[in-house]
Image (cartoon, rainbow, N blue to C red; front, side, top):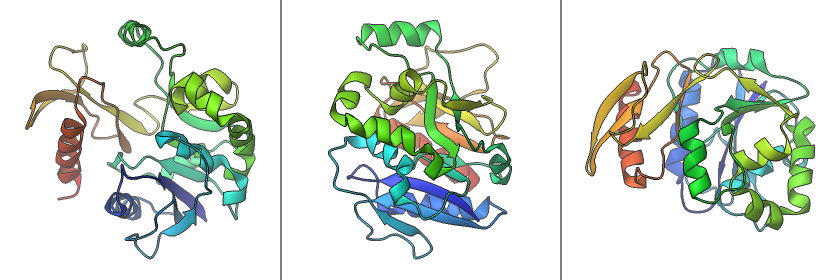
Length: 250
């Protein structure tokens, strides 16, 4: 049996977001699986979803994802695929489980280019994020050391690293192995203002209520992640997400 897990804590996401992800997995997974949701509110979740109540911890927003590495939350150590609630499963994900590493966390490597480095330096960020934790593959009980190290001084870590991806990049560079960007599992769904183009990229223009954005999408990839810059509003992000989702799930 294999595990799929997501996290819904706080008010950003609703039960419908979890249910939608479950349905996408169910349509694109050929192996038997358990679907887990780590949450503080089980109301509205579909019956096949296994609910795991998170502990009362002083964690902020996306830092709740760290709880997936807490071995006390798990009753098994089977290969596990973590998915953010704002990803779109475009194609079959079964083959991803053949990439699991028993000793390392497999995560998407995005690197940093000059534009990203310049932008983040202007924001005063001390660390760059070279990985994207929207999709991760691991054996959950074997990754407890990541949770243990983080939770030992969670307040400091949240203030120091400004995001889980920066924390993993800085603190656990040798505890991770990477998916091959564009190849193994995902395309980076990126919404950019129209002035930002890259050569040889599969750009498409998409209309939102607040104007046009350009999106980069690889239809043959298994998973499409949402990774928009701060110049694109949350409202635009979700409008584009809904349009792309509707393309695959009419």
